[in-house]
Structures are given as C-alpha cells and as structure tokens.
Amino acid sequence: MSLVVTGATGHLGRLAIDHLIARGTLPADIVAAGRDAGRLDALKSLGVQTAVIDFTDPATLAAAFEGAEGVLLVSGSEVGSRVQQHINAIDAAKAAGVTQIVYTSAPKADNTTLVLAPEHTATEEYLRASGVDFTIVRNNWYNENYAQTLGQVQQTGVYLASTGTGRVASASRSDYAEAAAVVLSTPGHTNATYELSGDVAWNGDDFAATLSDVLNRDVVFESVSSGAHGEVLRSAGLDEGTIGFITALDANIAAGELDKITDDLSTLIGHPTTPVADTLRTVLS
Image 1: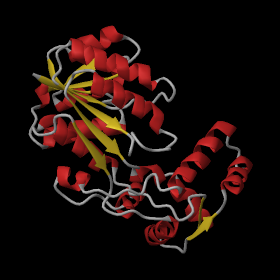
Image 2: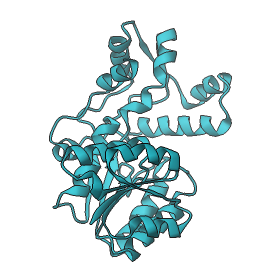
Image 3: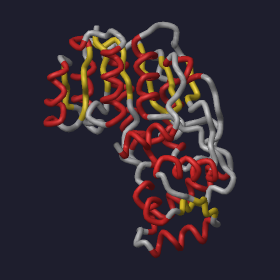
C-alpha cells in the first residue's frame, strides 16, 4: 500500500516527501504526484514512484490513487478554482479505496474572516461528509512568506504594514510539512483536526527587531492604515487585485486571525518550531 503526496513538485509537497523518507517510509511506497512531468522526473532519484495528475482531470487522479492507503492532499494553488479541484481529488480517493486523506487547510477555517479561508472551509465540509477517514492540518502562516521583504527592508530600514498590533504565530514550511508526514504515516490521527502554529506569535515591532538582527542594520516598523498601505503599494506599481489581497490579509492579522498559538505542531513533530529569524537567515545564506 502506498502513500500519495499531491503537489509533490511544490515546496510543501516536496518537503513532506523528504520527511516521510527521513522518518522511515520506504521511498518505493511513496507516490509523488504533480502536474509537471519534468519536475517529477527529478524526484525519481529519491526512489519514489511518480504520477502526473491534474485536479481538473479525474482520470489522472484515479490512476495516481489506485492501491493507495493514504493521500496527502496539498491544497491547490489556483485560488477561485480550488473547491472543485479538491472535490475531484476527494472523490477519486474514495473511489480508489483510500483509507485516509490528510488535507492542508487554513487556520481556524470553521470560524474565521481570513481572506484565504472560504475555499478551505468548503473543502473541509466536503471531506467530513465524504465518509473517508481524514486528518485536517490547519497551517498558520509560513515564515518563508516574509522572505520577499528582506531586500526592500535592507535598502530602506523600514518594515511597513497595516497589521496594527496584530500577531502572527508563524512557523517554517518544513515544520508544517513534517507534521503532514507524521499524520500521514503514523496511527492515531483518524478524523482529527489540528491547529498548527509556531510556538511564538510576533507583532510588527517584534518583526522589525528580528529584521534588525538578521540584516545587521536598524529596522523600524511603520504601522499605517489600510488606505495608506494601499496607496504605498499602488505607487510601487502593484495591480489592484494584489493590493486588495495584501491589505485584506494585513487587516486579518490586525483582527487577530493569525495569532492563535497551540502546541499541536511542536507535539506532532517532536521539537520546537522554527523561529522566523532562523528561516530568514537561511534565505540569506
């Protein structure tokens, strides 16, 4: 019986495969599934099986899931189309006789105003009603999401955001991938929902201090309103859709949607979560 990892050529899926192997799953028992055949070929050196899948083509999902015991359903990247894509994957897994689906969801997906949550909420509801045993891992924010701020802050010494005093309980992508590997490959997680977060929730001032340390220069946090933030982004040439998303997300953070700390993640992986400073130092190295 095999374990299928979707999104295997993406960051989270690939890390989950690495953690499965590191924790003792035989590579031959892993099916790396993704859309890009060329990138999948590069994974064959690990000894894993590969399968080209398309969430909009149920036939490819049926072939990939055949004989599988568990599926890690890494949420799709096509915002606006993900619910039907996830439904296709869940239906294919059920038809193939898969006994466990692990789904990567959003924090507090059943009770949140987070701009990214609605598609995750709908997927969770469908998965719970599917009759297939599941584990839902609700990933908080990734440390790596802040890598793109390093260059701008290095030049200006200013971290600008409209997050107010809101906090973010982030962890590294590898931490979340390791948790997914744990629940996919070990017993005791049937129909469980885990709220995964970092061990520490930081605010804008904390993050500016972290950037000061990582970049070895003074950095200050400039807290602005959503409207002012939008104007700054507009002057930088960003399109209205991107501006709306960034300011909505910052408003979510200001409202406390990413501040919940639990010990679910550190308990599952068996070690403390990765501080954002450590991740950013890795990005710079």
